[in-house]
View 1 (tube, helix red, strand yellow):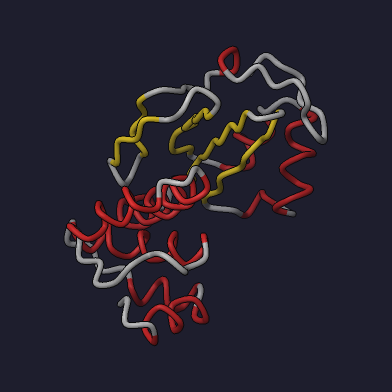
View 2 (spheres, rainbow, N blue to C red):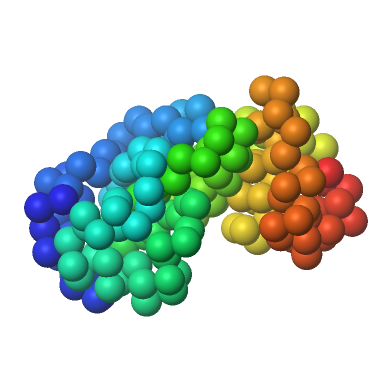
Length: 181
């Protein structure tokens, strides 16, 4: 990324920094979406080490991220949005852990991005094919992410529920009580 980000970016040149608009495919979900011209997305990939990746970002962007997610060195995945007037840019990255965890993290972060961009109906249709039993409407962004982070790996034969339950028991329990899992 060539641009110097500020704490509250007011002049992000999304295209210059590798963001895309138009038709995109969210990783993990393999969900194709047509973004409106004022929405941008960037996937920085699966990285071997989050701390090194984040240190490579422009200094102001690191500070902006730290402000919202705290000590990100220990994160295994995250997404972040930047707003500039009526424009929104979302980017995500995932730390390499294992195939099942990487897939779960990709699906989780991608589902949260689809949610934030307002593609809840498309996401719901996509996840229904993978075993979603009820509507996503009324769920929080995080609940949608956790649900996708379970359904996608399970659709590919990975067992992930126990790991998710151990990491985020309150969200997992709420999804079970709502009949979503």
